[in-house]
Length: 470
Ligand SMILES: Nc1nc2c(ncn2[C@@H]2O[C@H](COP(=O)(O)OP(=O)(O)OP(=O)(O)O)[C@@H](O)[C@H]2O)c(=O)[nH]1
Ligand SMILES: [Mg+2]
Image (cartoon, rainbow, N blue to C red):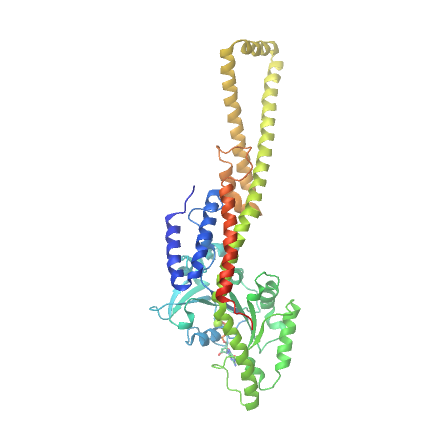
């Protein structure tokens, strides 16, 4: 049985301590992940310095994305009740800022490296991902990311991400890669638009990337679409026109139903002079803002469901994807090895017979074969030598075919099974056994258990978080 490295055990312990304080219900999910890890190690799907539990963020994560100068940073400042982020009418932010709670380190700014190197944060090893899409940029992680620690109480138990606005210009691939990563790992994504420019021209990239790409996601309900700076519609009183233009732009990208909010930031917007307009605007703003805040407060529950969902899908993945894929690869390997074995046999036999004919020594060959059969000692000796030679050829073929297949897997969907395949084709593994190494009655039962526990866990979460209707 393969065990996790010490670093992973330590990491699990600190995660447990963290959850005991923050959300004890989630402690139960840890056992499930540890079961999955054991299967992953035994099957060679996971390195022992990795863990399925460490591939997901354990904290609730809210991110603010959207067009530049829409008021993303101002929204965060108001939410925190602190002027933590710089704001302004030019494109201000050129980095993603992860904002998290810290008691002592009030308003401390740490470089991107702090996030890249720390498993506890949502950008662990992100530089590798950036390097993949933009060579050389992985090393410049500080140019893309920073971490701010502040002691705003509303931040307790969650993390916020502020982002550089989507400009009309082409986004850099690294920024898009980070945006995709954030969309994947967040529990709630607020996509900000600017009521001063509600028409599609000003925000093509945002529309394509943050609207069109979100529609068919299984987690599409975590995206909230916010039209900010609505106060600017007060003077001409053309709210309907502006909201209409905005919703048309969204629906052109396929978003027809969904969570649309129209707000403005009271703290930075100039006061609306006309009193009736002000009352109307404030009422709408307050109602929408309240809903947004409620959603932000709910992320803790969404995070818990997300973690169970992830555990479930990882368990399914092992059973429904990894096992069939490795079996398929092993069958292919076996077929190829046996073919080459036959070919080698035919070639060697052909060479011996051919050489004998060529040198006119066919008679000598036959006499040799007959003498071998006649004498038990020579026969045994010959069998041993031939068997050893055959094995040498066979093992040479096995390892060459496996090596060839591993190389071929690079850049295909099978790449994730490379090390599992290597494990399955080691010299002491039979070429005839096609079920994956490490996949047996126990691992099957463990997967079933994880899936069952996940369902029970969902019920527990429902009891904890779901509000009885009526
Ligand atoms: N009138 C009005 N102004 C706002 C509102 N929200 C933000 N602003 C102003 O709009 C400007 C841009 O705000 P930011 O918060 O910096 O916008 P951002 O989306 O973070 O911008 P980038 O980081 O540059 O993409 C600032 O001058 C804010 O004071 C609002 O609701 N109404
Ligand atoms: Mg900003």
